[in-house]
Amino acid sequence: MKKNGIVILLGMIISIIVIVFSILHYKANFDITIYTKKDSYAKEYAEKHSLKVELLSNIEEYFNEKYETFAYNVENDEIVITKYEGKSERLIIPKEIGGKKVVKVLENFLPNSVKTIVISSNILELELSQNVNIECYRGSYCEKLKEEKDGQVTILDDSVYTNFYNQNTVFDYEEENGEIELIRYTGSQDKIIIPEQINGYPVTTISFQVDDNASIYIPNTISKISSNFLSMNIHKVHISVMIVILISLLLVILCNIKNDNQTLEKTTRYVIINIISIVYLCIMGIFSLLITDYEKGINLLFIELLISSMIYVFIIMLLKISNKKIEKLEEKNKEVTTFIKQAKLLVLEIEDKDVKDAISFMDPVSSLKSKEIEDKIIDMLKNYNVSDKDELLLLIKKRNNIIKISK
Image 1 (cartoon, one colour):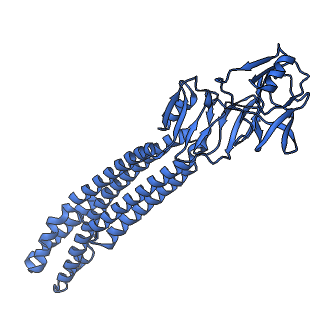
Image 2 (image 1 turned 120 degrees about the vertical axis):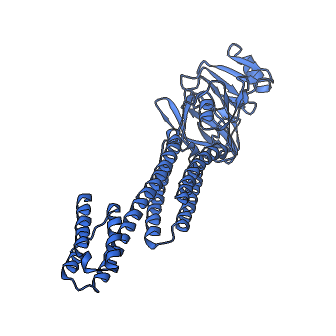
């Protein structure tokens, strides 16, 4: 009984250890840093998933990337832009596309949404029929434009930061209902900067998977981060937790086998129940790996661990109780078998037919209430005397009545 209590206690301790381990391991598993701004969705997401987060001030313009895509021709190993189909109001013309200098912009390449264009010192020819504002840095061509279109041209101070490398986007994306969803990161850098806009459309959703050891800037435009963003890392947590569960259960099985190795029946009962519990937990573990909504899924994992651990402990306790009852029944059957066998062996030496018949037709079931009478019957059979016949038959009858009432 004491050993049984130790096994139950061991199962409960292991369950608690597994749950605590899973939570701590989950929180420590992600070596990902989220850079974002105050009151952003990304900050809330990082805190919910126990990711490191660093807040940036609104004046760090370096992180405010806006990608643009253009149609263009290559002439003499230089780029001539022919068309822009986005909707940015302030459009930055890139310095290079595919490693080649952008030197010319053709007439009528702009949609009506563009109000201002910003050009680099690489631009040598700007054909514009639209009445748009032009911003450029001091240089020969910029000053020439200032003379030709004074009211439209603004010369920027050198301290004003402009990202002219805004064309070679490292993301695959989809545009729907005026919003951009990033579906794949095609770059190789550990430091990832999510753009605020692509072609003037706000980037609102991240749907790609991020690797561990990454640093990622997420702007305030992001309002959704999909389930597979952390899927690789969460799978690692699930697998680690399931390994710990299986090892723990195997230890409990070994403890049960060592504790109850007196009979094959007892050992078999314990092993079968433990195998069932392992299969159950494996199925639950596989189910957890297939969860797609990880914002809810990680909570489901912890709930699953808690419930499955409680179920396991319940099974162990139920097993102990049932085994105890089975052992009592087995002990009773053993006692009954011993009494009947002993009585039939002793009556062989007695010639009295009435006594032999009474013993032969005795009820084969027994109970604790009949034990005292059965012991007395055995004593009388061992020392049988004809004068004791009536008393012996009366005891047998009384014993059978007790059994009958017990039934």
